[in-house]
Length: 299
Image 1: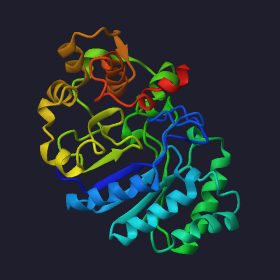
Image 2: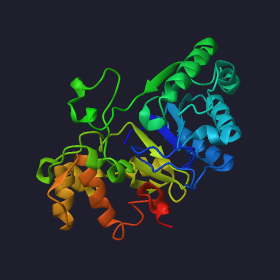
Image 3: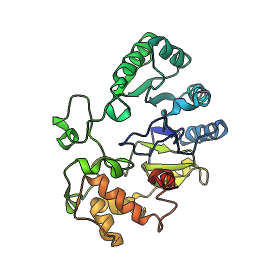
C-alpha cells in the first residue's frame, strides 16, 4: 500500500454533534493526540517515504489550538504539505478569523471548511464568509465542504445541488438520519461505492493509534506496529472485514459471517455499518475504537 496522505484525527471531541458525522464527534467524546505522539507519528510518516500530505481534522481540531499549531509547524518543518479541516466555529468576525489563521500563514496549503445545515445553523454561511475573507487576505487556499440534506441526497450525484455531496449513512448518520430517506433492498449493496480499499492513497489515524481504511475499520495500530510495516504487509483480501467487502460489498460481509439483517437500508454504508456493529465482539481490534461506534453515548 503506497500512502500519499495521512489524516490525523487530532481529537474525537467537537463543539457540535452533527447528525451526519462519521466519527460521532461530540463535546462528550474522549481521545486527543499529545504533542509527543504527534512527533512520533510524523517520524513514522517520514520513514514510509511516500507520504506528501498531512491533514489535521477531528472532531474539531481548533479546540486544541496550541497543539494544532505546534503540529502544523512541525509538519511543515519536516517538509510535508499541510491541510486542515474545521467547522470554523471561531470565525465570528473577519478580524477574529484573521487572528486565528494568521499563525498558519505560509504553513497550510489547504484549509477545508464545513458550511451546511449539518454543521450548525444557517449562521454557518456568515462564518464561512468570514473565514474565506480572512484566508484570502492571508493567502491560505480554502475550500468548502457542503453536505446535501438527506432528502436531497437521495438524488444521484449529478442531480445534487452544485458543490454538495450526499450523506453517507455511517457513524451517527446511520442512527439519526436513515429514517428521512428511501430504503433499498439489502441485496443491492454488492460493492463499496466510496472507498478504494486496496490502494486508498490516504488513511485516517486516530488518537489511539488506529489506522482507519474507512471510519471504524482498522488495518493496524501504529503504536503497536510501525506505520511502514503496516503499509508493507497490508493484504486487503485476507483482512477479515476488507476481504469480504472487496469480494461482494456489504452483502458479502453479511453472507460471510451469517449476520442478521433487515430487508432494506438507506445505502451501502448503512448496511456495512450495522453489520460491523454486530461483528465488533468478534473483531474488537479491527472494528475499533468505541468512539467510532458511538459507544460513549451509552453511558
